[in-house]
Length: 379
Image (tube, rainbow, N blue to C red; front, side, top):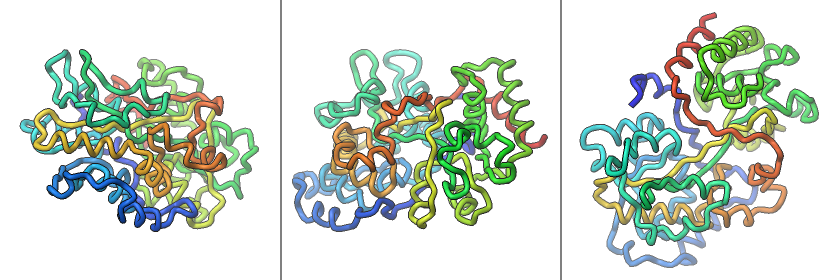
């Protein structure tokens, strides 16, 4: 593993948890109906099968939990979640492959170390795909991201999302040219009214995209120096840098800032306060990510974990997850459950928007990115 694992923990914190319903009409009645028996009862439920899972709590919010447990016949017990880095550290630690039954984490961050150098080195269980038939219904955008090796499947994407600019449309017009890119966070026009995230990974990446670099994770030392200079120069326009979900939401809701680097659930939380807040679709690069379900190699309850992953890929769970958190399911059946307006709001149409999509992958030289970010912050 990368020697800077402890440093990366603060860079890769999971997206926020907000268990309450964000979209209008997403009431508890639907969940009550499901729990009452509209989904088939699995015989395994009566046997009290259970799995211990490490995943962001936001990915199994209270209204969606009964759906997963009813469909799988498995009780899901959440182990404490910290970050993708911490999840990987737990998996890679001595005995880590037998401590938990399943995990959900950033696919492209976890898969390299988890698979190991070659066939036979995997720290993951080869999934029995007959227990995960819903994997056949993934959106085409993510079907290619199922992680396989030597004819075996090890990871299946279950949730996806994107990072963009969250802004107050009462203060920054949506038709402002700056709003169509990450430039709104760097321009002099909104000096003192923008917030960056205190995060080397995300901020250096969006700055590089904004400056026209085609593939930020491949930047060499010279490229990184140029982006560092750019961010130091633009820092004069920043009101503050946020580190926590609640802090970021309060910055916008209080009116202290009008635009910030933000997450999907922040948009939803602010809209729930009846604020005219939305996200942009930056043409210079929308940061996309997906998180996969996988089972440690020696998991005590691997088959039960596979049934949970299958339930998380169901359209019933996917619909409730998206309603409650705004995070979209990777299931190809879910988008059709929303009307055209909500599909566009939630981003199910990102492929058709014509914006550049760029995966939130980790650069090989992340240590150098961290050093550069520290330089930017102290400049």
